[in-house]
Image 1 (cartoon, rainbow, N blue to C red):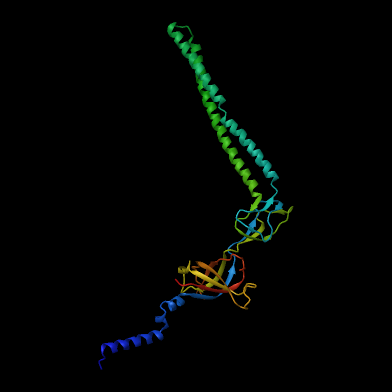
Image 2: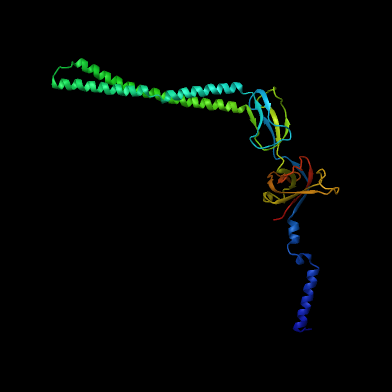
Length: 309
């Protein structure tokens, strides 16, 4: 049976509408593909990016504690001050020795005197030789030789003075290095934080002795914070790095009045381990999420959703 053109167009239009109604994928292009590209990991745990045990670089007596537990600190903040009275005295002595060495290195009096003496003896020799030219034997040969010897001695005196000045300059540089070492020793008595974060533990008290290498303060970083989980390494790899992440956690105290409702934190994948577990095929994945109010704490668990491309 052959339908007329208007009727045929009506039939085609009806079939197209029916197909759109029963095919969600065609009705909403990209939605199913987008959902399928997301990765959901049901079990993930919060951990610290920085959990630093700040140790004393030297053995000394604690003079003061300059922070308290709970303080929010920046990198380089003074944590503990050790007794540095002896180190400061040694530094002052080193500075004085350096200044004396610098004065000696700048002193060219001997060299200038030797040059003046050389000029005088050269003129004296020249006058004696000119006298012999005008009147033979006016100055004896032995006297002329003595004058030549004096000129040579004056030249050697200049070399000696310049040599001693070079030694003095080298000694001055040595004293400068000694001052730098002394200043470093003084600085070692001020224990500063190598990371920014929150002070959570202080071990010593003022007046106590601490040994070199002993931890004195513990500092943790809470923002951003790390999310640890495992993922199938046979399906996913480093291509997940920089993908957006949502972390859902329902263990936050008073996060929501609705029981069991999770709070959401946003971040991105920063690391996918290249080591595949030989039995499970899992690899470790790290993500960092913003935690500006420090609501997430180490040990909390939740769900991770890695967004699609």
